[in-house]
Image 1: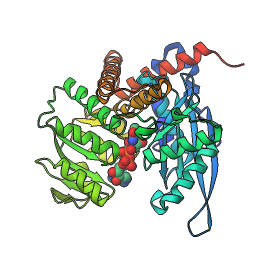
Image 2 (image 1 turned 30 degrees about the vertical axis):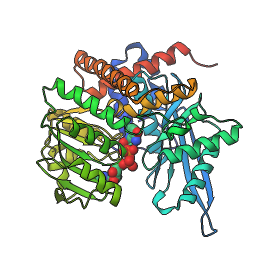
Image 3 (image 1 turned 135 degrees about the vertical axis):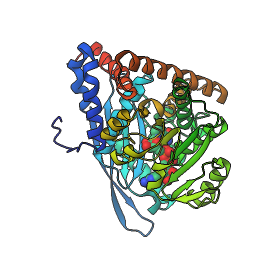
Length: 423
Ligand code: NAD
């Protein structure tokens, strides 16, 4: 492993997982391999202190990050995560996966990611707003519509993007809608953005199923994580004839071999903040989720959820990675050995960044598209990207993840080579 003095990754940590993915792609890069070290180093990591006044008058300090992994193909792009487990190393890995993702889908962006090490549920709404605004000011040094464009990720949403947009605009003295995506519609947000990642998961899952001769009609789908990504994907699979046989979130797991009622699950989530107590299925244990027989398994919660032990047990045909980095490196090898097709995050969940790209384009041109136009264009881009990756996998007889890295990293390193080294 390369020696970066500021992190010490283990094999299955997010950055360690990413580095082993890079190692696997190098043999397929031809002459571009001389630039491979670029992929193993973030271009820039900013660590910021975020002091805020709490409602009781005391002052609390939080640690925030913005990492720009690679900007060779365009401005940085990547979400902002608020979570107590956020670390610099995690943000580095998430930024790097954004580099590969934007390139694999051929969007004119680099890869970036940000986060604050905080449990946002412990803050009042006003405290959360102060936190977001101070963080935005601190990273304002390196973000901007043509530099680096944040978006929502775990525990951040359109309202937080609105505060970010407003803070950045106040600091630069003009309204800069294009500085973030995933904004509310009246502030230059795009129709279709909220469900875009889940829609992309569905489109890519549909394409993968077709190539495996698996009909979606009656197909059994298990979903871990019933947030933005998991719930939207589940809704579309159910709407296209599949049965959602198990769902797990941080509040529990429910199972129903005849299919869970999605509208009921959505209402449960809306009213109770989780699906753990949903009455339309049998409650099962956290580990039992991984034993439920399915045709498609969608990890759409956090990274590292599908480790080696779980990979030995899962009974499914296709793992469709809604989350970023849900499968550890050793689990990936185990799934391949067991003949289970893994559709990797960098393509499976690229729908969100694709519609973020549409949002950014619409903001620049101040001309907004209909939801139908957005969904049709999203479908077209995802189908084309998946086709290219599938053919690359076929050509080299490599897993889809390595193929997605071949397609993405080749584009990144071509840009690197053509730009040349400064000075
Ligand atoms: P979210 O906060 O809306 O939902 C996260 C879900 O995961 C929740 O249902 C939560 O209960 C569940 N969860 C958390 N910890 C869990 C655990 N230990 N076990 C089971 N369930 C658990 O987040 P999201 O936006 O849906 O993001 C989910 C994943 O998708 C993340 O990896 C994120 O990086 C990735 N992703 C999100 C987007 C996007 O547009 N939102 C785009 C690309 C990738």
